[in-house]
Amino acid sequence: LNRRLGGLGTTIFAEMSALASATGAINLGQGFPDTDGPEEIREAAVRALREGKGNQYPPGPGVPELRAAIAEHQQRFYDLAFDPDTEVLVTAGATEAIAAAMLALLEPGDEVIAFEPFYDSYTACIAMAGAKRIPLTLRAPSFRPDLDELQAKITPQTRLLLLNTPHNPTGMVLSAEEQDAIAALAIEHDLLVVTDEVYEHLVYEGTHHPIATLPGMRERTVSISSAGKTFSFTGWKVGWVTANGPLVSAVRTAKQYLTYVSSGPFQYAIAEALRLPDSFFDGFRADLQRKRDLLGEGLRAAGFEVYQPQGTYFITTDITPFGEKDASAFCRALPRRCGVVAVPNSVFYDDPDAGRSQVRFTFCKKDDVLREATSRLQRLT
Ligand code: PMP
Ligand code: GLN
Image 1 (cartoon, rainbow, N blue to C red):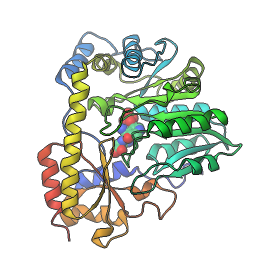
Image 2: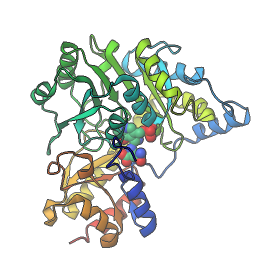
Image 3: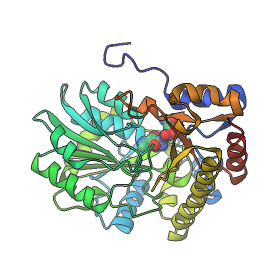
């Protein structure tokens, strides 16, 4: 392994899911739902496959039907207008969009400021681009970013702000005021913004406002999202980028040599998913909000300190009330102790102290699974 990737092992999500399989524990670690997305969308994928749509290489930027549906979605929910031919790019999940954006937009040695805890692929992709990550640490209990600290971290080497709202793993959702302040700094220092909005439809408090909607931001922002989380098809790996023409063209250049194209028939199905009525999006959010409260109550009853997430399908907790400090050791022992798998947030920090005792649980699971998991956790002593 080269020096850029030295220190990166198996992703924590794969490691914890393997631990769940090996032990038969309930997996509240990796964020994937245990109920697949809508039947009609699965049918749409089968139809596409049978009709021979997307069984061979789809067009590089994505099939026109999906690019049109992505542009319509941005217009419908955020009043953002994108030209589907030049300002939309379909990717192999948000993961590839993040990688292609970093590889296309960064020079070796550039600095990227990102929220810590970092979603794991940010660290890897910044490293693969030869750039340097600069953490802006989100601290419990509120996990609000300190914008004075952000300002202080901007140097002549800063090229890009990598945002994530709603934020995985903390569930923090940037407020309108925070976004205004971040946008003002990006404009003042002429920075690019890459924003990962895969949980855009899972906001329980406040609302999701893409930073691209703010004055002066559209031309410097690459917005990333994915069908995995919104439609509960994480295995289909359909993601996308929206940005102005030159930025999309830059990201597309890198993307061509990563996967070239992906997910042919699924692209047609996701085009239909993006056009589902508001009742789908509202119902999905309401269901997950109820699950958040169910898991949150169970975790509190078990003795965890629970940080209420404003968005995403994760709850970050603290294990200090159990007299424990090391989230990583705690998570590795948890399946044996009580048959549950969770993810240690400590691995998402550069600062070894900042997240040492934080553990993340996902609630995108059936109610009885959440109930069983929390009743097992309540037996922890
Ligand atoms: N960004 C964040 C914040 C995520 O939680 C995830 C996991 N869904 C991704 C990106 C990757 O998304 P995808 O599965 O579409 O590649
Ligand atoms: N986004 C998912 C999570 O945070 C995991 C996706 C993955 O395993 N790459 O759990």
